[in-house]
Length: 311
Image (tube, rainbow, N blue to C red; front, side, top):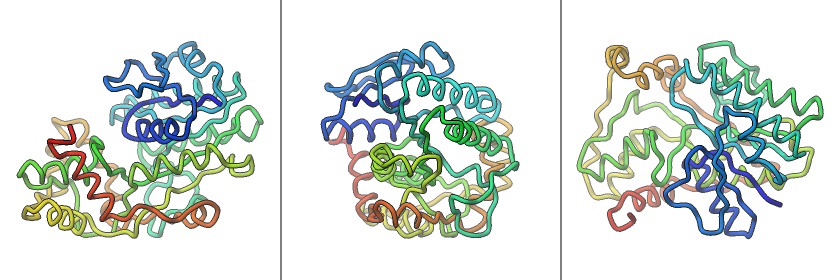
């Protein structure tokens, strides 16, 4: 079976590597050819906002794994995500291909207990409404028998060379540069982080799963939750530097947000960091596997990816 991977960011790269390592035929699809494309992978230029382009990218594939992302801007999300989802679902329906969606947890909105897959979809916040809307889209496609679809949901990413990760690029990378970790929220509340290779492993688990696992969402297992401060302290100890943190006060986000759209977009996501943010992955663990990568091993690999000799 040929598997199309839409998007070649951190999750797409890791997923492609795992599939290629076991001998699968992999087609990578995004607008521009990656600078470092695995030799065994096929590449097709595709724009997820163009239906014909997506159909060509998915032609002849038995499964499509969506690993795409858009700029962190509600105005873009509100237009781009629904269109992209419709295009990918239509292409999968035409090919009778499975659709595996690398998803996040926004659609649950503010919660005061561990997140479970059966929580209702939220109407809170612009980006959250978008994620709820595209969730309804793939659920409807599955319920109507048009596409065999499933979502694999993960908390905030970290891992080797993961861009825009508070723990990776704003934490570990800055420590290795001799700078303080830059933290845009309180570092002292328990928070789950998803290790990108575990996310890729979970996507492939669902790719291989029987049909009864589809039509629903599954949470990626994480190592036991800790605080961001505890992870930064652990990483600093591994690197051999002082665990310095610069924590931006919440009020400062509003000021910076006047000039930086990405910071502005963090404001409505405050519910993820003003309380414990815990993901219940017991449903996945009971059905598939529960041995998530430890933070010690995950941080070690993250540190190694930023070392000069790894470039």
